Structures are given as structure tokens and as C-alpha cells.
Amino acid sequence: MNPPSSKPEVGQRVEISGLDRWQVYQRLQELSIPCRCATNQPLIAQVDNVTAAIQLWSVVRRLTLGRRDLAFWLEGCWRRG
Image 1 (spheres, rainbow, N blue to C red):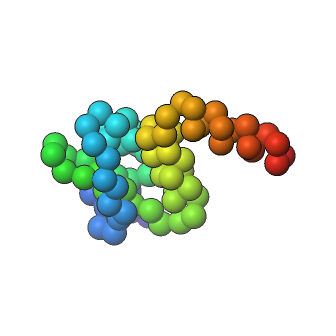
Image 2 (cartoon, rainbow, N blue to C red):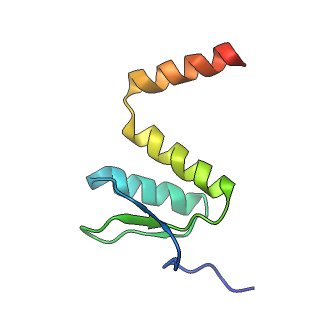
């Protein structure tokens, strides 16, 4: 088995600005999702399966939505559950 590459060949380009980009990058690294992020460049994450796609969506959503929107979404989940 080949070790994961730090530079994915196929990836999803994620346009996120400034500090949020680096926070997303660090969280994806913690989740073992291969990604790269260079200065003044977009974040590129390797999304090979549904789980990685959902994790990427969740990380980006958490950092880009406001607290009020996240609280509203969470309340909706509790009502449906």
C-alpha cells in the first residue's frame, strides 16, 4: 500500500479566504483527508468517497456559517430526530 500523498492528484478545489482556509486545512489533516494549501492559493482536498465529502462539507460549513445559522440548523435536527 502506498502512503498517502501530501499533494493529491485529484481533488476538490475549495475557495475559502484567509484564516478560515488554514483552519479547514488543519482540521482536514486531523481527519486524515489529504489536502494542500499554499500561500495565496486555494485549498485543494482529495475527496475519494462520500465520508470524505461529508467531512469536508461539515468542516467548511462550521467555519463559514454564523453562530445563529448553526444554532438554527441544530435546532432543526433536534426537532426532526
